Structure formats: C-alpha cells, structure tokens
Length: 248
Image (tube, rainbow, N blue to C red; front, side, top):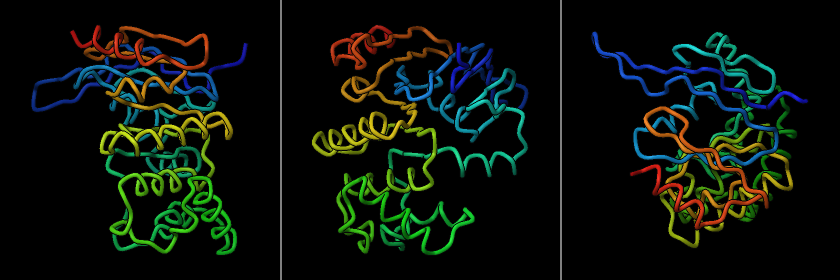
C-alpha cells in the first residue's frame, strides 16, 4: 500500500508564554492521500490554522513528525524549509495578500523570481496561471482595479505559478460574497480534479466544505471526526450538521 502524501504523526504543538504552556494540538494523527481535497473544520481556537501551517512548513511541531511527499518537514532547517516551500506549496489566504503596487502579472510572477527560470520561462508560467483562473485579460490591472473575487483568483494564480503539488487554503472564501465565493470553490475543484492538486483547506463555511472529498473536524487540538464522501463530494447538509455537532 502506497504511503500517504501527507502524514501527521503524534503531533503536539504548544505555545509558551512565560511559564505557561498552551497546547493547541494534542497528539494529532492524520493521513492525506495524494490528490485528495480535505476540509478542516472546527470552532475558533480548535487548531485548524495551526495544523495547516505545520503541514505547509510555516511552523514546527513541539513534538511529533510531519511528512509531505516523503520529506520529513519537521526535521528541516529554516533555509531548507524556505526552499522546499517555494517548490512544493501554494498558499491561498483569506485576505489575498497581493502587493498593491504590483500588477496582477507582477504579483503572480513573485514566487517565480525565486526559481532558476529565464524571463521567457517566467512569462510563460505567469500567463498560463492567469489563463487557468480566467484573468488573462486583467494582467496589467492593479489589485485596487479588481473585485474581491478577481483578487482572490490572482492570488490563486500566484499559488499555482510554480506548479506545486500541494495547495493550502485558509478560509479562501471568507472575505467574499456568495457569488464570488462560489466561483472560487469551482476553481479549486477544477485545480483538484483536472490538475491533480492536493488541497487542504480550513473553512467555517459548510458550503465550502461541501466541495471537499473529506471533512476533518478538530476541537481543542484533537481530531473529533473524519468524514469521507463515498461520492467524492461531501453534501452541504452533512458539512453543516457535522460543524454544528463539533461546535456544541
């Protein structure tokens, strides 16, 4: 049987303030298959974003081991992690994190500047990424000239520009209206189904979670529930019911 693409083993994450320790994740175990689409749900403070950051190599566990694509991320140095992230992880944030003084093209090009690519190769990657998110005609626009949904699509184009294996998304529709949020979720489904991206997404929204193949519910740093859809997609009702049950 093949190894999971992501393996979280007995992970504990504590934050320390003076002599006090706050345990955010408490002995967590989680496997994610390559090409899966996983939604992390749970009440505020349950450890969802912390787990996402650990998987993406932004943070380190206090104890335990995290393996992504056969690489022990938790054992890497800071410089190794930075290089690994730039080659393997695409980040999608709630508030887009675009640079306001750069055009859409320049924002998407940013992660490629860390790659050993020629200007022509970067141009090809940027234009392909903007085409995937249907914004090729907006490449010269600045963030202030775009709608919120368009800004998030530029952010997704930036996330996929280096062709990473894993996309991590923290509330990707949390700052969008219903129509724009739906467009982003359809795009993420496409990235998963057509381009084979493994996606781990933190969300509070049952409609967003319903796009996933699997729901993982955390509460107080512990895995409370793990639902896999037999049909390849979670229903909105199941997502809403599970979210309500965990939040009680």
